[in-house]
Image (cartoon, rainbow, N blue to C red; front, side, top):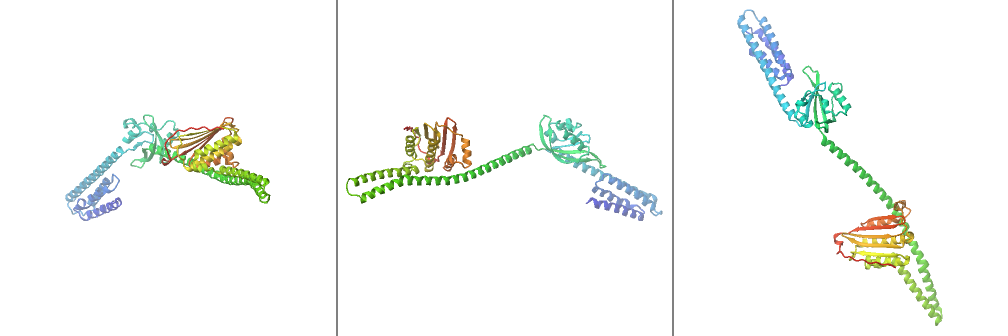
Length: 485
């Protein structure tokens, strides 16, 4: 039954019983019908004194009913009935109050068992800051037993250096601050600091007066560690994203510079080929045409024979020049025989042209290397030897091509004047020269790695490394050859 219904029915029952008692002079209504049931209804009223209040009111009404009853009824009978009714009323009130106490005691025991078995620390504190209850969860969390903490200040588990927290805690216990939930740091018996979540609730007595605070404290150390790890991971991810963004931006910038520079180089190469064709091949063809015209219109004799000899010499020079141009563009040896013969021919030719002491070492290379790697290696050697000839003033150049496990490595080293690598890269990024940027991009597109080191006055070392797949690996075979002019 709802407590509001009980509060409404009890006055009606008491009033009805009173009127029946007045009109039934024998007094049967007092103990047979009403007041006992009214006292029973106080089970649904939370106020513990309600059964006795109903019994008191019933007693008063029974006396008034006896006074107002008709006087011709024997006094002993009417009095006996009312005395019995009042006795039953008080017995019922006592039983109801006892049942309420038993129910409350059972609920209190259940609540105590729940509190005691809780994994959270549950305790109560007076407004002066002294602990009054301390459950098993608090013992496990802080290391103090109930005997050690009950009657002791709650400041025992608050670190001494957190003076602000200590002052706030006492102010909260006295009710001068709003009670709330919060995260804090607490101190265990063995001196450890732990992160906890504290939930506070006010404690009030039967009159509604504030008498202290109950506290539920939960260990959140794992949650805090997880939050720290998550925050660190998030920060690391942010840094990585920024780095990748910067790398992509730099790569896009480098790609634009490289594309523009490649177009310039393409035009420069076309101009060079045009000049070579015009200045050398074109002149030889013109001279050949003139000689052939002399032969065509001249008389038969020694003069025509001399012109024919000159024409043959011009044809030989023309073939040599065309062959040289073709080899500079792409040697047929690279396509037909592979990287090692092409390098052997090219470095020997460059050594003769520039007067270098040049050595080529080929180690553990048998069979053909994948075509993209061969082309990249050959082009890098071309570009490197051209730069050495232009800028390095080197006397000795060493090339090493070798296979190590699953990698093909090419090393180019000279004893020239060297240069500032970082400055050269900045110039390349600024679009002033294609140099290192073009070499690095060519190697990267072939799936390799590119490293360069140089010391002023001590020469330069360039190292390329290309990984091979299982299908591309061949038997290890050691060969070393040295070529010098």
